[in-house]
Amino acid sequence: MQRDMHYSAVYVLARLAGIKRESAQLIAKASEFVDDSRESKLFKLPTGHRVDIITTAHAPVNVKNILSSDQRYIWVPFHFIPGNLGETVEERMICRKDSEIAKSVLERYFEEYHKERFGLQYLGIALHIYMDTFSHYGFSGIKSDSNHIQHSDIEIINRDEINQHYQERFQYYNGLKKFFTKIGHQLEKKVESVAEIVGEKTGAIGHSAAGHLPDFPYMSWRYKTLSQGKIEIHERNNTQDYLEACEKVFEIFLRFRMSCPEMCEEQIITDFNSIKSDVLAILSSPGRLILRIRMWKELLEKYSVLSDETVDWKSRNLKLAFSLQLEEMMNENLDLGSLVLYQFYQAAHLAQVVILRRILPSHELYVV
Image 1 (cartoon, one colour):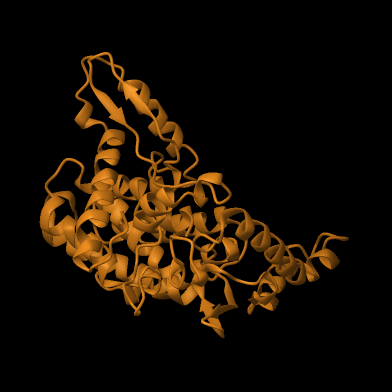
Image 2 (spheres, one colour):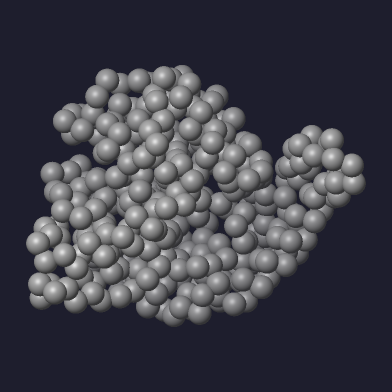
């Protein structure tokens, strides 16, 4: 998933469930920042304190992705949490949609962390982990045969619909219309090329061999894998998977209202079915990421929730905001624990430890 889901969808669903603006923003920003926290640094502060920045993601093509330690400390807990289905350890390490393990990470918030200062950041991180199961299922965070896809075996099922979208959008531009009538074929070729290159460079970690296909909410596609000498065909409808994820997240926010009423106000939507068609329209819209982000904003405005200028819909300045807080850490008079950035690192480190040292071992999965 991309920031139209991890940030925009999370924020809008939280607000429609009646969660106050500030709390909804903290949850959404933490959810998105899991994909953006790619640095690993140790800061020594003038006060004598030290802050260890935790890495929660790498770029898709990064040499560190082939390191076993990075696979197990980053990709497994934060992006491809094991589903624990199958007989072998390799099979059990494969991410599964709406898995019990992913839900147990969320459960920790309601049972233990909802009163902590870093509680909202933990919830945002847990939501990121949970939502990724709806797009990353079938793939593993460690090098695995389940991740190997022949680039020539990837097929875009709704190619004609995507093609039609671009034809209609550019029909008034002479010279471009003919170009976009071929976009479906070109998209398949591009996917094949990118998947082959990325898969080779990363050693087939996660869905690298499929490129960004699992991350596009409007995409329907199929691919083949070879498992124990047998060819398996996998068909994916991202729109339906993402719609299911949105409904589950909305239910989580309704539960949040019960646990943290002080962070909530008047509930706007009580039943996801009342916005289901609107959400479906957003998810099934092909095209640029920014268009879907705009549609999420419009959905909020449709229900008379005013869009605040402080809400960073493009998520363009999230990294900048966090980097500015790094500078604030140098202030000797600052309460370090009050910084949103420090709270994110607290929550991320806690989530990593809880998953790798407690939750997975409780299922007899020993990753580190």
